[in-house]
Amino acid sequence: MQNNMDKILILCLLSVIAGCDSAKNKSQKENNNESETFQPYIERLAPELDAIINPNSRVEIIADGFDWTEGPLWVDGLGLLFSDIPPNKIYLWTEKNGVKLYLTPSGYTGAEPRGGEMGSNGLLLDGDGNLVLCQHGDRRLARMNASLKDPKPDFITIIDVYQNKKFNSPNDACYDKNGNLYFTDPPYGLENGVKDPLKELSFQGVYKYSNTGALHLVSEEMSRPNGIGLSPDEKTLYVANSDPNSARWIAFSLNNERLPESWIVFYDATDLVNKEKGLPDGLKVDPRGNIFATGPGGVWIFNQKGKVLGKIRTGQATSNCAIGNGGKTLFITADMYVMKVDL
Image 1 (cartoon, rainbow, N blue to C red):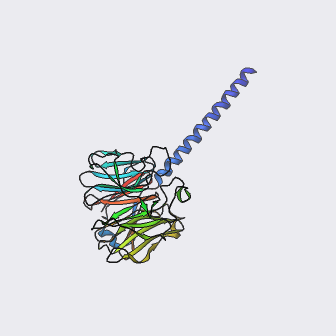
Image 2 (tube, rainbow, N blue to C red):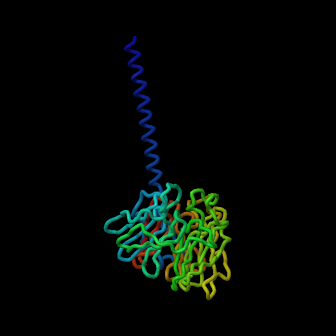
Image 3 (cartoon, rainbow, N blue to C red):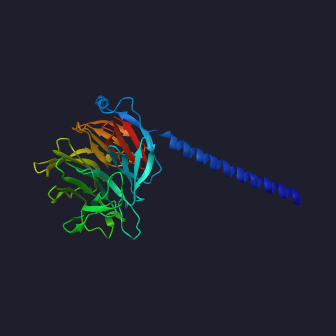
């Protein structure tokens, strides 16, 4: 009798184990299928897109496994730099060698441990070819005090205060042809965001830091100013607002002093926020005035008049993009991925 009971117990245990393995395998299969169901693709909404993106182009993932990629910057003779914000690092990608760590720390250089979005965000080059970083953790615009080919976490502050109050966390930036620096300052790099007790400014600003050293407030009305870029004639400044309640792109008309005299809503995507991943974030403008702007669903491609010519559907919350490789390639940072598309 005891032997029979033991056999029954063993059979029951084997059944439970088999059931668990089956459920585990089913779950893994479902997860794998879910990750494979969406493949990034290019959505063509107007025939004009063919003059911008090669009709035979596809979206290629060139790197993955990061926390949150941002700030892509193509550097001739070096490769693609991009930020991985939470771990406070910058990576370098090349066609030949793939990805390697380029610089750490990149945005927070303090001694006291902290969390949040502390690394560098936007990356750009100044007129002398120096690396300029929007440093979330240190709450400043800074220049790396080292050559691009021999990087070191040695930084010189460019600007870090407005009216003696610390910036929130400079996010993205661009230079004009005269060396004036435009940048945005949302609260994303503060550990507790807009409610952080260390926040000193009552607004999220857009600024112009002139080549004479003067700092001008371009706008304090935007709730979450983010990506920023200039039209080729430098008469229009585009700024993305990454607020789910006001997800739109603003176009500022600039006067002869390159300061705003008026503004319009270039495009409003608020109604898509709950339907697709992502918010208006980073943007770049090509030499013909076409705008590549990350937003709900991926990368939007606008012409100068605000017509949507197409979208690069990444399937991820998409943070930023960069034009590189002699204008032949669009690089995209999207969540844990880095992607590229032939132009």
